[in-house]
Length: 345
Image (cartoon, rainbow, N blue to C red):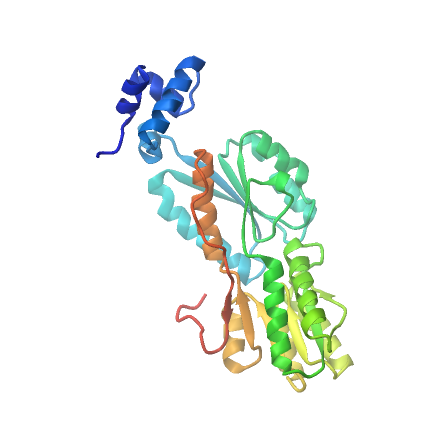
């Protein structure tokens, strides 16, 4: 059988095609009795709206905003680059993308960036969160104004967003701990943990997962106090070098966040004597080179390009009041020197 059409729905409901169109495209001014008839006809026929055709006929597009930290390190750089590529590709589909930048780990800067977006006519907004209760009021106001909101990378409270797209950061931390434990081969050890900020939800979740696995399955491996670096390479280099020089009993390094350029410099300057394993997050030119020369051992990559592509598809769907596109759980990639992709980031 051919797919049911709007005309079929109108005929079965006993209304005009114009009335059926008003109901199906949510334009209002239709009697409740007619609405019920049309909804019944839709269910009976299995009619599915052709959103693309409807948007084309009405010359309707999508105006989306992505609130991202500045290109302060390679991970956010990859996000910006992917959006630039996607924006060119989506122009023909009437999707306009604006990028609104703020300083990473600056909660006030994020709040300022989000405030006032409800008055700019955006259909959907995706943002990289910082902490549990960061920018809650402007985000709630944004949703209350009818704008669809998606959080990326680091999740926030559910009243702030419609959906979250990103990896399970506790699982990522647990994975890192398992790798560190295996790298010690049953021996005791001491781990240096570095993070951008303990206030960032993704970083604190990773540390929580990391700590849980080591305590449960590798209790002879000690976690020392966390070094906070704001993901700044210079700060990472100085603080990590100081820690490595101050005590020669460290057997592993786990960097929860970014600033890997500083980490790589510190390890190269101080040597790997005594280090069983070094695990970082995100693949970049720097971490790729460090994997190849043995400075680090593992890079856990959350694949931001996939996150952004999913966010674009999800925002377009929920703006049209459609269910989210089906997608499997986003599992981070584990890169060793042996399985590096051909294409550099």
